[in-house]
Amino acid sequence: QAQLVESGGGLVQAGDSLRLSCAASGRASNTYHMGWFRQAPGKEREFVAAISRDGGSTYYADYVKGRFTISRDNAVYLQMNSLKPEDTAVYYCAASRVLTENYYAYVYWGQGTQVTVSS
Image (cartoon, rainbow, N blue to C red; front, side, top):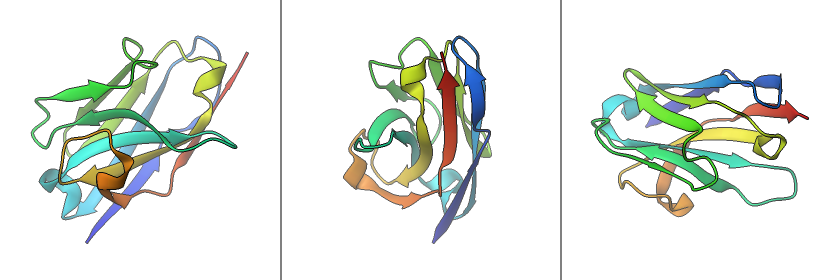
């Protein structure tokens, strides 16, 4: 069993930065590949970024590439720069045994943290 807890969300203006953190306990700490997803009101949950178990490989959705950076040490982070209003969503971290952008492969999820970007 693994527990994931996100933090770092908030209300910012367009162009600002935020850093999300995901604290993992139990078996998730260095056992799983990790990903960030987001879900805006009325929309499906979508992939944002993923990082391999050892931190050596990262993947990004096209709409965040060049603006967001995923990293990990004992926790998993999502550095978000040049934020846009369309980045507004609840952001979730998740753990998977497979390094993938496929939502269905992630077996453990956090409760989410709200990010709101005003124009």
